[in-house]
Amino acid sequence: MSAAAIVVLLLWPGIHFVLCKTKGVNPWKLGGWAMYVVRSPAVNVRVRVEPPGLGRMGEACERERQKFLVRRNSVGSFARPDALARCLRQPSEPGNNRTVFVDVAERVFDGDSRTFAVKMTSYSY
Figure 1 (cartoon, one colour):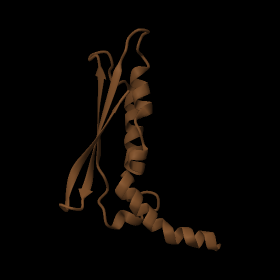
Figure 2: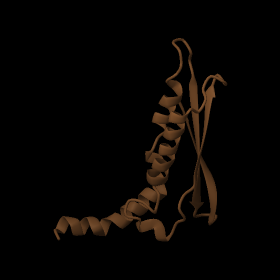
Figure 3: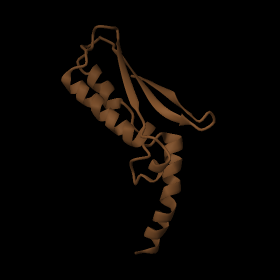
Figure 4: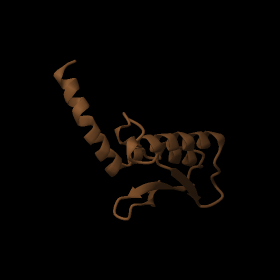
């Protein structure tokens, strides 16, 4: 085994822990070194399209929503809902300005209070 591989193996647990704490990376993914100290995260996504009534969550958009949930559960805030927003905006006619809002609620552990809290992240497109 090369010296570089040994260094990576020695450093990765610390890097993984920092990514879990700062970027919301799933502690059960990417080698899973932090999985022993943190519950698997729960993510909920709410989508709004304005003006209301113009966009419905079709089958293709629901698949994009599911893909986003899987990515968000794996790599945390590195995953953005851009593809989901594009899917919802795509059917708009010229001159029809749609705004897509994606609200992401994630269960995170608050070390100060030693309880789980909900962290909200909102995106608008």
